[in-house]
Image 1 (cartoon, rainbow, N blue to C red):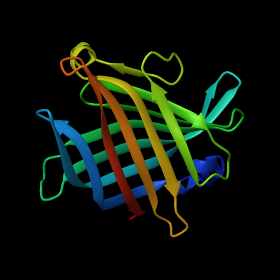
Image 2 (image 1 turned 135 degrees about the horizontal axis):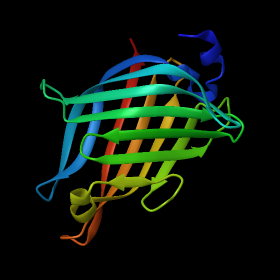
Image 3 (image 1 turned 60 degrees about the horizontal axis):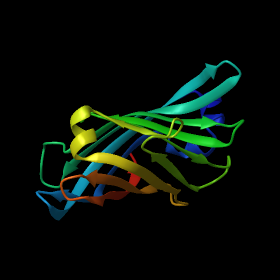
Length: 185
């Protein structure tokens, strides 16, 4: 890891590295029934930067995450993307995609020394937004996404994530939530 990149990651600097946990809790809806799945997770954050967008300079972390139900070798969730720090604008961005055909560009105002922060995205937003493939847009449309991050003094980090899905057949929004506390390995 480049010390120069780490030095410029602001609030993301403590996340650089590989993290694991078997304390994850996923609450979702399967066959119209709320279902809780406990899971193990591995997340890798690799420093990148600087990324230059004209005068904008970003530093960040290339990100991959995989989650498996406890006791299973088959993953039930994966994400690929970037966590980015925009020092000039005081913004953290989490850009991710999942292999179901959903992309999320979430963001929020964060100070360089913050140890907890919230990122959000909303369907239809041209800045911090969500896009889905045609099938999901018509059947399980992701309307909102938020994630709360806490970097703990003991070196662990935790997140609580809420993905709000609109299911037209039920005419209802349901909250698909995930939370975990991970330790660096």
